[in-house]
Image (cartoon, rainbow, N blue to C red; front, side, top):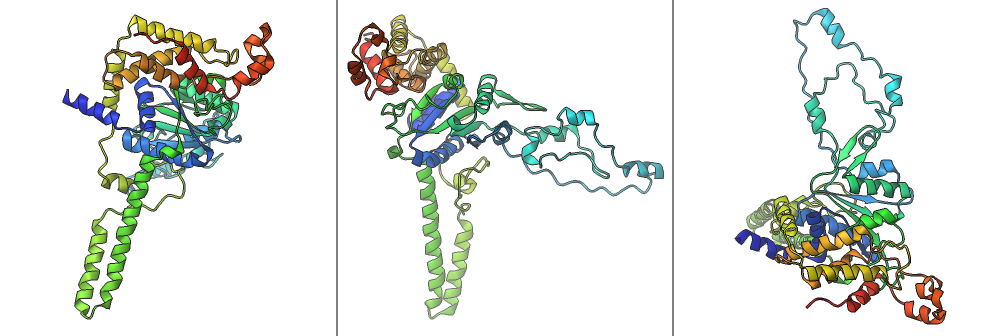
Length: 458
């Protein structure tokens, strides 16, 4: 019980981005995170630090553009392979017969044209670690690779994938992402790569809070650029206000500043030691300064960008800083079990279904906009249970349903863009009145209006 209470206290101390990632890991789902365009790079680095420091999971960055191909996607979502072990050089036995010696030096035959046509050398994953079109065949004197070694060198999909500007990617790339999220595996020309057990896909998007599809709060972040089926598959959406800051990134920069100040003080002491009259004292001061530098934990150079594919962005800082214990896989499994055992009273369930109905029939929601889909209804119930587990409750409250609705629906709602498309116009409503009514209404306003109209059970 003490460990459970400690875990809940740890969860209650997390930031908004950490909580969004935790909810997705507990529910085995994926999310959309957005911010203003000028803070997109900082948000990406913050999410990588969240994966590293809060959950101890390796992450990769997929920078999507209109020219991104399927090969680029398949190569970018995998972790870098570890360096191969050094080859063992064994001397040739003098007892080897001439015929056997000639057999070992005979070049192997080139691969069959049929194999080349089948695409055995043109895998998505081979394109990253070798040059395109290069045939990886054994030459004379090359030692044979055991099946165990080949298994160890297979590429692996990262636990956390950050797809920046996914809404700008071509449709076939987004469809491939949809298949990855649905089946938790990706098919290449020559292999099938399965996602790890702890798997999180985050679409990192840039949206202005003043845009019409955001509705003031940044909720409708994915209403315009993503494929509808992919957009509907995302569990929750979250708008991160740059004014709220980036805690992990700021902590990392503070560590660098402290290290720079320490090095500056040591350099000042090293240079000032020679101003003394006693040369022996100056020599001792300089020696002690060098010893102190080697004893401190020296961070790696400040990165120029956040596109590195390493697990830890700054290993020395992570090892030296007294950060809290990461949330482990067993902790996430415990929270998932608690979420499955949460009870929902019939009155709360009725309130939940009323919210779904009012969202679907709201006059500002475009017809066929895909707002209250079956997946959204399932996600609403699932998220309410997960929130109850994170609050240490064994039941769902109406306030948790309202909170879940604010995270599940905004990225799915498509607001009516023209007054002529509003439903009541066809029954004689005044166009000018409808236009004034819809002015400034976004997905967040729709959800707030629904929650204000639906009465919560007492």
